[in-house]
Length: 179
Image 1: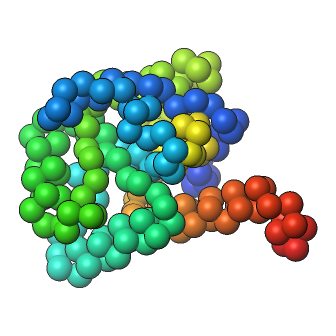
Image 2 (image 1 turned 90 degrees about the horizontal axis):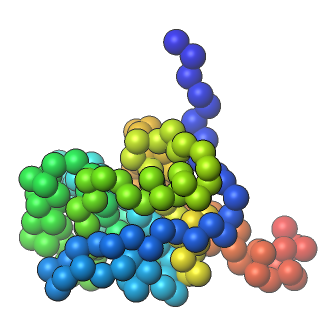
């Protein structure tokens, strides 16, 4: 069996992330209104992040705090069963401090992926993509959430940190020359 190398799925930068409709307890809103002027990570199937042990929970909370320090906001898109979606929401709300809780939206049709495929005119060969969105609302990168190593929150924090450093270098020509 031939396997592909495990590398982040990168594509042309500055592709506007789809402004899909998400359902909240307050009604339907467009995603852009939630993500404007914020660095966002959209994690497909956030139930996979739910820790099973006390030690995993501590690492999970530490990773969420590190994302906050990097000024990233996490959003979950549940694409599996509605029961799994409710489990994720209930666990987050009952087990985490309020400032660490992140929104999870039920997206069984995986609309963001379908719309990006249309924009790119090519198929995204990842079942559970993890999207990195910049402050302008543009998709910068997709991690392969199908690969165990890449979907771990610690790996996501590491990748987010590299993206922050990369953006600082590009935004500050003097810093870019020193590297």
